[in-house]
Length: 513
Image: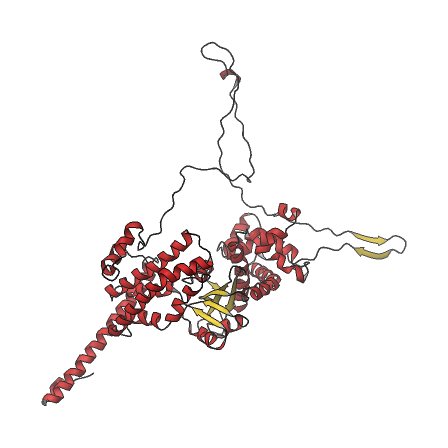
C-alpha cells in the first residue's frame, strides 16, 4: 500500500480507513518476514547445523507440563521425552576375532643358551605357551581366468571339427568374470565408491580400465538381473502394506540448458511375507511413476503427503497411512517462531513413540500391539486432536506452526489409521532408511550419466538393499547369481532371491562363495 504523505485526506473517516489499510499491510509484511526468517533459519540449519532433530527434554517439560499433567510421573520411571536414545551396556575389552578366519601361527622359542636355570644351572623344560592374536589384512588379488576349449577333428576325413562348449554366461563376451563385476557393483552401490576411485584401486594392481568399460559392465549386470528385479516387483506389490518414499538425483542430459536435469529414485519396501526393497527410477517426479509401479497393488501405503498419491487413494483400493516422523519435522521447524505450541506438539508425539517402544520391549504380537494402541495411543491422539483444533483457530494459516497443524489435521484419519492394525507402523522410517544408501552414494558419485544409468542403478540398489535386509553378503550373492542366472529355469528363478538364496546353494557353491 503506497501513501502520498503530502496528500493525506482530511476527512476522519478516510483517515481511519487509511490507518486500517496500513495496519493490515504491516501485519501482512510482518507475517511474511516471520515466514522468511523461519525458512532462512531452517535452511541454515540444514546447510550448516546438525541434521538430528534433537530438543532438550527439559524444554519439552517446560512447555508441556501444564498440558500433560501426568508427564512428571512418567518421566520419573522412564524419560519418554529424552531426545537421546538409551544406550545399552557394552562389554569392555578387545573381544575374540571370528572363528571362521584363517589362522597363521608364528611360533617363538627361547634360545638354548637362555634355557639354563640361573639358580642351579638345570635346563628348564617347556610346560605351555602364551597365545595372543592380531588381525591382519591382505589386499584383494586380481587374476586372469583362461578358458581353453578342446577342439577335435577326424583324422580320416581331415575335418569334422568339433569344439567343447563353454558354459553359458550371464554377460556374454564380457572381459570381466562374475567376481570382478560383483566387486565393482558392490563397491559402487553398497560401499559408495565411484567408478573412477575403483579404477585407481585396480590400477595399483596393474589393471588399467576405461570408464566406458566399467559403465558397460554395470549396465550389462543390471540387464542380466532384470528378470529377478521384475520378480521382486511382482512380489512386493502383492504385500498387504508397503512403505514408499523418493529422493532426487542429478542426471546428465545434453538437451537440457544446464546439461543436467533431476531424476527420481523411488523405493518400495514390502511386508514381512514379501520382504523385498525394490527401487524404481523415473526421469521426473510425475505421478505416472508410482501409478505404474503400484498398478497391481491394493492395501495400506505408508507414504508422505506427495500429491501424486492422492489419485491412487481415490481411484484404487489403496489406503493412506501417514507418517508421524514427517509431522514431527513440521513442528520442529516451527519451534523458533511458535515456541510453546511447537514444543507441546513434539512432547505429545514423543509420547506416541514411547508407546511404540513399550510394545517392542514387551515383544507383543500383532493383536497385542493393536490392543495396546487402542488403550493408550487412541486417548492421547484424541487429546492431540482437540488441542490442534484449538491452536488452528488462532494460528496464522501460512505461518510455520499453522502449516504444521494443517498438515496433521487435513490427514487426521491417515495419521490415526496405524492404531487400527498392529501390522502398521507409526511412521515411514523404513523407506527413509532404505533411501539412505542413495543419499550417501549421491555425495560420492554425484550424478547418473543418463536415464538408462538411473535404471541400472535402481536394479542394483534393489538387489543390494534386499541382501542387506536379510543379512546376506551382497558380493557372495551377486557373484553366485551371475554364475547361475543364465542357466536357471524360469520356474526356479525365485531360488536366487536373497531371502531364498542361502537355502538354495549347493555345498560346492557355498565353499566357493
